[in-house]
Length: 109
Length: 113
Image (cartoon, rainbow over all chains, first blue to last red; front, side, top):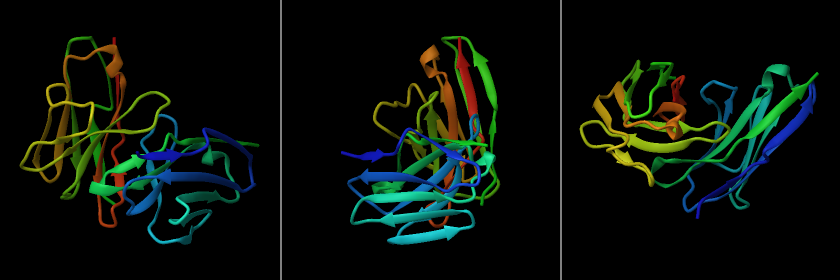
């Protein structure tokens, strides 16, 4: 079957670093997405990993290990506005995204 | 990235009625998708809107309940038919661009009484 696991909730402090993990088991794999979704808003694209390794984009980095079925999103220098849900999604067969349930991140002062 | 708009942004409807949601993109795109996101849940794909042919529905979704139109490469509609309170949700359209990234419209928040 298709399965994507993320922690449900995480809490961190402003200025700190937080790592949000995602493990997946899917029948096909073309790449892995991370999206950010603020309450009441649509998801916004953060990153797309196809190859193993770390991709850095400003304060956000995303890592992928295809052999381990594992990814993480790393958020540095946390700001209050980073409080949101972070969704992991796998680009499987037929160009359909398989979505995790999301990790709700609360950043405290 | 493409700019995507949806109408209406929100609506409150009576059970048994139908609502049509519009999705407009500022550029031509091949792949358009319709999702539902129920409160506190992740996204569930309803169907892929194909230009010039019938939409492709996911398991658990049928054309009679969620008819979709895709008259051209910049526009699509999703109708939620014979609504019940269980249809209360956020409905999102998305488009796929080069690199397989999907970008989302702002969503339509539907409440069925």
